[in-house]
Length: 266
Image (cartoon, rainbow, N blue to C red; front, top):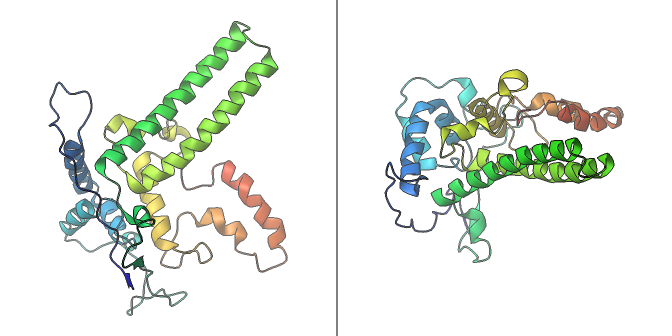
């Protein structure tokens, strides 16, 4: 037996000390209050999250914010379906999550909402990775300037470290995009894409774009199934996989992605 309820509730909320002006970090309660205000400010994002299969992260806060907006919803914020609530292109119903009942104990963690403490932890780890990336560059400068190691050795060591950190950066960036959209502190939105004003788009625009992508394309084999997908220009090269020339275009996806045609910004 399965249920279509979005996600299991998270574990009981621990009692947290109130955040005062003398506190160094937010507590979980203060973070939840901040999330509520953020979703009221970015009500379009709240509407996008409500259109996702599981209601999105922070479903309660997003639902409350989306409900306050009485204006008609733009097509950019809703799923493009027919009168039967099915895709206009594939005629498939909107997918819903199937959660097993009773829930096996070894699978429960996969369907449990992350807690505010876990969201804050993810942003702390992401911030740590950003700091390490910056320090690695400074270390490389020092190694070259003061000839601490031969150029080849210094480049190999620092290059390896940066590759590992960069991969983790992208992984955790995607995790916070889906599970902890708004960081505890506003300044953390600037470390995700430091050069956004020059070569990319800022954090909130990426969040809007990425959620629109997931709302339009539930299945990567059916792009734009439920409306326009802003990430489709990346996957366009694989649309001809059933044709002979697909062998020529599919290998181009990786370099096309690396030069900036991706939906997580540059």
